[in-house]
Length: 498
Image 1: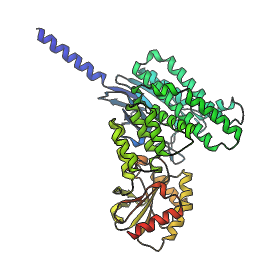
Image 2 (image 1 turned 30 degrees about the vertical axis):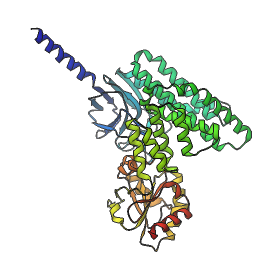
Image 3 (image 1 turned 90 degrees about the horizontal axis):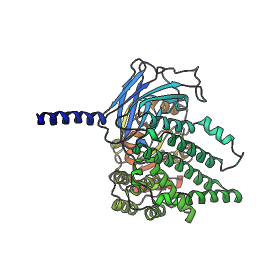
Image 4 (image 1 turned 90 degrees about the vertical axis):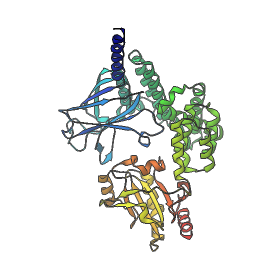
């Protein structure tokens, strides 16, 4: 009899464990079309931009306006995004209805999404079944177990929307160049206040992660604002004000940066913020923008930890393409112990001179796939771009186009452009874009945007992103050495001589 009760006890507890590792999310959005699909992206950890990290994808079809997600085997909290599978605005992809929301095992959340009056699309225009209302045109109501987390992050999102930011800026002194920085500080305070109001409804782990994520997001925005202001400041008085704000930013966070919790490694925005902090701290002491110096400065400033490993991976992902170095990469790989950070740093080797080029298979607008092996024995220039990227257009107009004409009679030189836009946008740009080099091979990432394997292989973080591949199929030059007509011509001629 005793063994019977033990068995029943174990079965009951096993059932509880199984129930506790699940989460349920139901989205009610009656405005969406009957054939719409919602996608739920999940990441339990990541470094840098979500799209450059592996994710789990769950889809839900429209069932009378309801979209049901059942998530099993949820071992730890996940950062999630919800989007319509073809979400876009003015032909520019706008993927997320919700982005970087926190989901825990045991959540059973109902989300009611509805369109609202807004700057981008009015309630009267509604939803036409093809171009939905974008992120700032939605209202959301949350209920159920775990809903408080979602409400906090939704409120934070609303604080960052255009109307809210314009209201804050309108309340500040006019024409003050520091207003953007003051605005982020005000929004940070409001977001933190909303978080503290709901602390009793949150698990200790959720509160800690949300606090780190919110602090990280606005610390990152403030740090980037200071960096931009430092770069743009010409007037002496303006520059002095920016330097004063930089000193405040550094000194007010010194103790926090030294004493960070390693649990914060699972709040990706906090890791991004620490990377930005070390960047502006370096500018404050040396006024140098050298990548190797930034790496060494960060390595010495932060204590050896999982967080430091991810910060080092973050800064290398952001800047390594501008100053590639085998020595720097090997040093990072020798000291980093966090497996996620190590995997990200390892990928950076793929963009080093002498490495074998990615064996891509990419379509053109007609649906024909082109492969790297098709260009064997030729020098291949590749440039990655997207429609709304102004520097991409300038680079193609001022550098790629003229160099393409320079080699127009040489069949051993191929020029390839790779758009990360969706096919509709790519097709439209081919008809309108005078900046695209005439006679080039124009491809796109097969509706996979920045999730395409070629983008993750090279860890492309900024655009334009040029690469040069030699006749042997290996990289000749990194991005930083292809920025001018002279450099690109010289690199191609060197490749032809080999």
